Length: 416
Ligand code: UD1
Image (cartoon, rainbow, N blue to C red; front, side, top):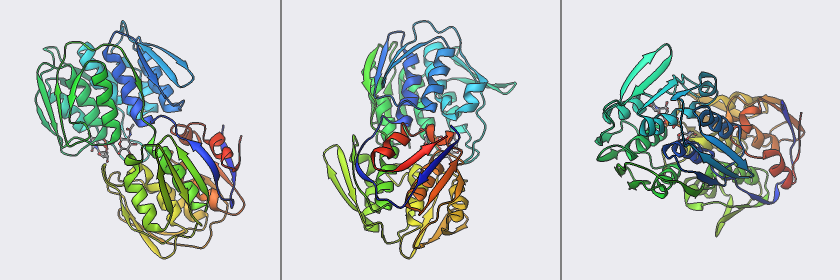
C-alpha cells in the first residue's frame, strides 16, 4: 500500500476497540527468549514492528506461530546470538534483545541501530547499564558485541535519564544475573510494568516497576507462561483525539484509563467532554476547543507519542497554544505538513506556537514517522475535501487495522 485517501469533515461516531500495546509487546517478545519453555502472548497486535521483532527472534532459532492475536513462542535451542543487520536497521526497538540474549546466552551481537527520523537516539545508557552488570562491550565492523564471559552480577544502577529502552534492557539482563540489582531513576511507563509482570509470571523476582526504583533479584531459570498484553495507550489516545477533533461521539473500548490521565486532563482543559466508563472512555465534543499549553515528559507526564496528534487537534483550537517537546530533538516534522493544510504554526527551538485557524483544507501530505502519520490522519479527518497521505508504511508500524477501525466510525477512507 502506498497512500491513504481520507475524506474529512464528518464527525466520528460509534465504538472502536483498542489493540494490544506495540511498545509493551516488543520487549516481551524479546524476553520470551529468556526461557526454553513455550510462551503464549494474548492480544498481540498484527503490526509491521511486531513482525520485524518476531523475525529477529526466529533468526536466532526461536519458533513463532501466530493464530489471530495469539502468539506462541518457543526458544528451546538458540543457535545464533547475532541479530541480522537488515532487521535491526528496519526497527530500532530490536535493541531490546540485548538484555534478553545476554541473560540467556551470555553474549549478543547486534548491528548498531544508529539514528532515526525523530533524532539521533543513542544507546549509551543501555550499554552503561549492561556494563555495570559486568558485560563487556566492543564495537566490531558496525556490530556491537556484548558479552558476559564471567556471568552478570547484580548491582546498583542510577540511570542518567529514565530511558524506556535502557530500563527494559537492564531489567532483562538483571532478571537472571547473580544477586540483586536496583535500578534508580528507572522509567515508569506502563510498558515497563507489563514487562515486569511478564518476567514475574515466568518466575522472575521484580519489584517496584511503575515507580522510579526497580529491584530485581536474579534467578537461575525462567519458565514458560501465558501473558495478556496491556492495551495500547497511544492508539487509544489517538482515537480519542480524532473523535474529539471531528466533533464526534465515540466509545473507545479496551483501555486502561489510568494510563491516559495526562492526555485526558489536557483534553478536558481544552473543553472536550471525556467520560470514563469501566474499561472504556467516551469522548464527545463539538470540535471547537480552547488552545492549551502542553509539554511532553516521561510518564506520568504527557507522552511524546501523543504530541503530534494533540498538536494537530490544537491547530484548529481557539487562541494560541504552545507545545514543547522535551524527549526527542526532532519531533516536529508533522508541522510542515500541517501547514500545507492551512495550519498556522511556528517552531521556536523545542516549542511549537500554534495559532488556531477555523478550518484546515485537504492536501497531499507525507507521513515522516509513525506518530506524524497519526497527526496527519487526524488533520485529514477534520479538513473539507479528500486528503492524500503518503508514507503510510510508518502508520502500519503502530496502528493495527487503522483503515477498518476508522471505517467502522463512519470515515470515508481508502488506500492504494
Ligand atoms: C520508547 C518508545 C517510544 C517513546 C519513547 C519515550 C518503544 C519501542 N518506543 O522509545 O515510542 O516515544 O520510549 O517515551 O517502546 N536516549 C539517550 N541515550 C540512551 C537512550 C535514550 O540519549 O541510551 C535519549 C533518546 O535519544 C531520547 C530520550 O533519551 O531523546 C528518550 O529515549 P527512550 O526513553 O530510551 O525511548 P525509547 O526506548 O527509544
